[in-house]
Length: 142
Image 1 (cartoon, rainbow, N blue to C red):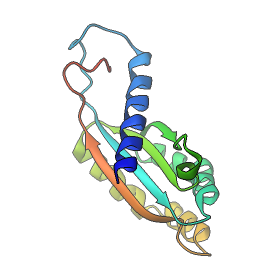
Image 2: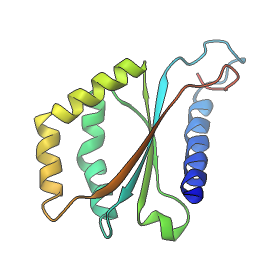
Image 3: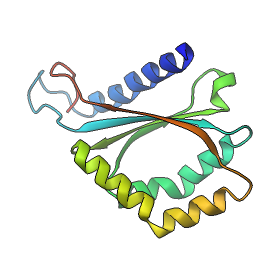
Image 4: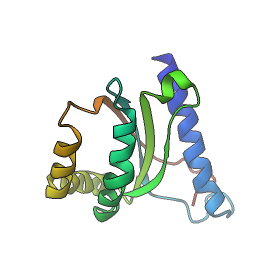
C-alpha cells in the first residue's frame, strides 16, 4: 500500500508539472478551477499490454468524445510495478461535469463493444483507485 501511495504521489507531481509548463503566470492569477481525477488501474496478471492497447486504440478517443481532458498516462519506473499498474490524470470543469462525463462514457455503445471485445478472455483490470483533486491557490497551474 505504501508503494502504491508513493507511485500515486510521483505521478501526480509529474502530471501537475506538465500543466505548470503550459503557462506561467503569477500565483493566484487566472487560478485553474478544474477538478482533476487521478486513476490507478491494477491490471490483471498478464493483461497490461491489452489494457494499454485498449486505451491507446479506443478509450482515449472516447474520453475526448465525452468531454474528458487527458493530462497524461504513466506506468511506474520500477519494472515490477510497470507490468501491472497504469496511472492517469484527467481534468474536468467541475466534479458534476466529471460525473456527467463518466455516466455518458459508461453508457456509450461503442465503449460497451470495445470493453466486451477486449475482455473475451477475462477482465483486464482487477482494481481501480480514483481520487479527485483540486489545485491549491499557490499551485503554479493555469
